[in-house]
Length: 556
Image 1 (cartoon, rainbow, N blue to C red):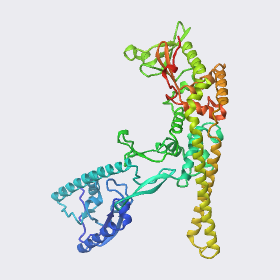
Image 2: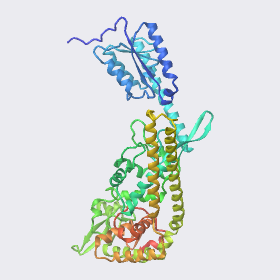
Image 3: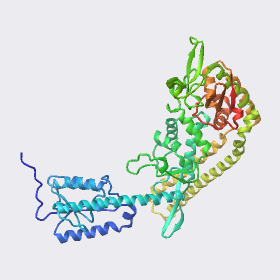
Image 4: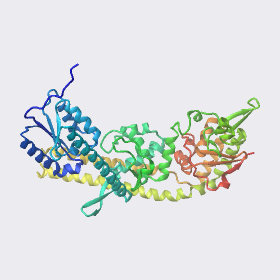
């Protein structure tokens, strides 16, 4: 079988010029690309190589091959026969900063009679020249990695100081100049009132729904936003993913995470590598945490589906105080008795957890009695809600200022429109200017969005939460007590899971009940009380156990 040979280069080969800069800033400065082109053309003329084509790569890294101009050049070079025999670069690092990838493409091109030539690093095609080129590539790759490491270190420190490192800001924020250090202008994020209202609307829908209709899921929120023509930052439609990302992004509580993912693969990094950048919060932490809990109840990892519809009163929320694992159902005396038993002990014996068992009827009765006579006491409820009541007026005042800001922006956009119309009537602006229509459309969209956001924000103030009066707390307490004793076991089970999210068995005679003040408030806020208490089964948190002595409950 005849050995395939690389075709010999022609006597007077033609060249393709490959010009690349690493960053968009270098491309915008218009310095590196023209200079490379001038030097490459001069070198090609000196060699007598006619220039067949030019491939320009503005602002792309050479650590991978995801470069449009690079791929176009490779495709052209692999044609039979190739339109050029030489790829001319300023230095080998312009072609690739990865030694393995460089050699892969160099051999691929060589098989089709195309070679790579650097005008600043001339090496031969003999084995010695190939070895020298490979050594240069290794040093280029090393230098690239070192530069990336130092750049990332500087960017992390920049984020720690609260400065923005670039890219598009999250919805609800805009980039502003903060201070100047030498020739560099440091930038920060500030709240953009228009986008901020969209973010707050999404959180309100997740907690309360449209007009307090009840909590909405991610898909329902996306549908609501699209139906009401509320667009994303880029004017597009909302998807389930973008809504979910908005609802889970800690940036909105003032903690923007920088360096959370690998740049190339977008895989998440270990949390120890994250840098928390302080930004102005758009939602308070209580609201954010309540949304996470509301979402977690739909996650089968938070509560197994068998517990959601389980007839067991404390199914899915009762845990062993020793190992932290769930308590499971066990029966005795030919099913005459039912017990909550530590699942670890049931599976592994006392080597896994010494665990404990308690009669189901005793623990269920003890939990209900505690919630009725301790937690749902109107005086106890008022004491737990003091902080939230104090913050209510402050929160409403802040929202009123936000509405005023939105209306001011709508007025400013309308005034610009009116001035533009007046300029057209006076002949100052040419009506045939192609940019005029686009500008009018932008101003109208800006005005209409600001007006719509202002109306929604003003309407939302009316439904923030009820004034937590003694009468409301008493009615809530009485109605909830009655429901605890209702014959509808499923409703009672869901109500308990709303008010108390975790029951920890500390000993055969003692349990600790844990819950969330935010969930209590949400139950109070929707429809003024109990009607919606069983709509949501929250995740597991420990907030309202103020003193252990008031929550440690003997039951036997």
